[in-house]
Structure formats: structure tokens, C-alpha cells
Length: 91
Ligand SMILES: [Zn+2]
Image (tube, rainbow, N blue to C red; front, side):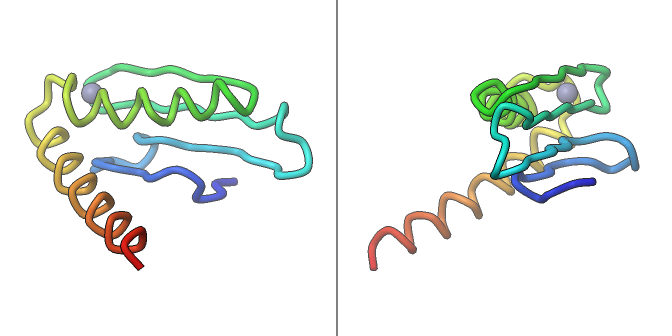
């Protein structure tokens, strides 16, 4: 089911987190949804909407989530991600 397109951050319980269904041959059929342990949930259909949802989810967990453990885990995840991206860019 999950393609692994987006990062799944801070999901201590099964069923929580970000799920993305993505078909490279049919971008308009891309779909995603997330459910945060704090109760926030959203879904999107279509390539652009899915990308925006992935960004919103990351931002929520890093900055907006009322659960401190989620924000801590997300901040760690994004720090590692940015580190590896900047390393790749320098080469
Ligand atoms: Zn949350």
C-alpha cells in the first residue's frame, strides 16, 4: 500500500502517520492521508495536493503538534534529512 514516497515521522502507534499512494504513470490519481496522534487528520488527492499535504504534515509535526514527543522526533528527522541533502548537494 505505502510507496515510501514521503517520510513517516513520529508515528509511535500503528495507524498513525503519513501514507502516500503514488503511481508515476497516473499522477492525478496520487492520494495521501495522515493521522497524527494528537488527533489531526487530513487527506488529499492529486499530485500537487499530495505534495502539499506531505509538507503540511511535516510542518505540523515539527512546529504545530501539541505533543512534545512528536515535535522532538520530527525535528530530529528533519535535521538528519537536511544534513544528508546538503551533503548530496555539495558533491
Ligand atoms: Zn500532531
